[in-house]
Length: 208
Image (cartoon, rainbow, N blue to C red):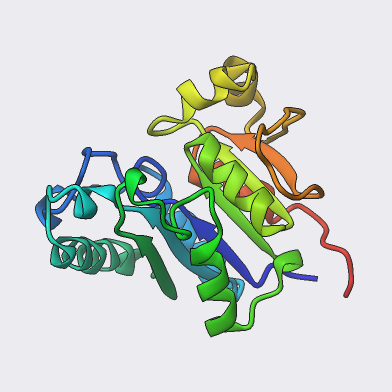
C-alpha cells in the first residue's frame, strides 16, 4: 500500500532557513528538495507544507509575506515536476497558546478534515524535535528528522549519532519523545529531504 501524503516542515527542511522569512526573494531550495517532491508526485503521493510561522504573530512580517513565499516555492519546484498540494501554517506566537502550533495537531486536524487523509498512510518530515512530536501526536505512520536546518542540533538533543545518519542515509530512531500523546509512530532520521523520501518509499505500509 502506498503513502497518501507526506507532510513537510518548510524552513530548514524544504528551503534554507532564513529566520522569519517573509520576503519571497529569500526562498532558496535545499539541494535535492525538488527531485524528492517530484518523485512523490510521480508516485501519486500528495505533498503538504505544515509550518509554524510565529514571525506573523510577532509582527515581523504580514501574512501576505507567507503567501508570497509559498508562491515562490511553487515556482522553484515546478521545473522538477514537483509542487505542493496543500499547506497549513500557524501564524501565532508561542505565548498566544493556540491549538495549531506544532507539536499540537490543529493543522493536521484541519488538513485531515479537508482531504480525508488516513493517519496510517501519512508521514511527517522536519528538522526539529517538534516535527517528530507533531507526527507522533497526530498518530501518523512515520516521522523523519532531517539534519538540514536545525536538524543536526535536534538530533544531538535526542542523543542520535549524526555521523551514522549521514553514512547510512536513512535510519530508524530509538528515542523517547517527551510529551508525546500517542504511541505507534515509527521514527527515522535522514541527512536531508531527498534521503528521507527515498527511505519512506522503501517502507511497507500495513494493508487497511
